[in-house]
Image (cartoon, rainbow, N blue to C red):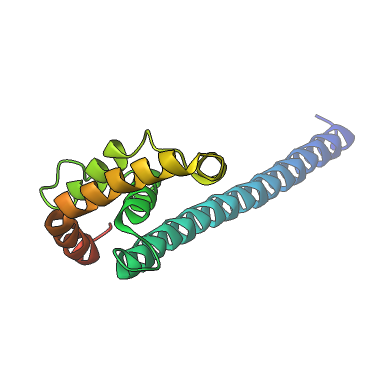
Length: 152
């Protein structure tokens, strides 16, 4: 092998090494960016989860007051629990929120409520008051149990 051929082979080898190092460095940068995006997504997920848990706690603190009646609190709490993928419908005490949401799902809300005739509103209001009275003790237990619940 001539000296020129040796230098050409050496130069080609160095080019392959440099290209390989550049490619490895590029892949490491891409992996770091991917990891950062995944971590940011996980952080955002945990932040949103904590916001929902905080919302549940706020609702529990005002549930059954003039601010938020039991029906509205139950519907909102049940929806937040669903968003958290927490199915507590089988829990002896906490199931009250699920029961109230289920029993009142046929009652119109928001704009539909506003367009109801007064007699229909009164009928639904009596029905809701009946549910609140019937489940008052269960709802209080549910409130206490959910306040103490450890969301993992």
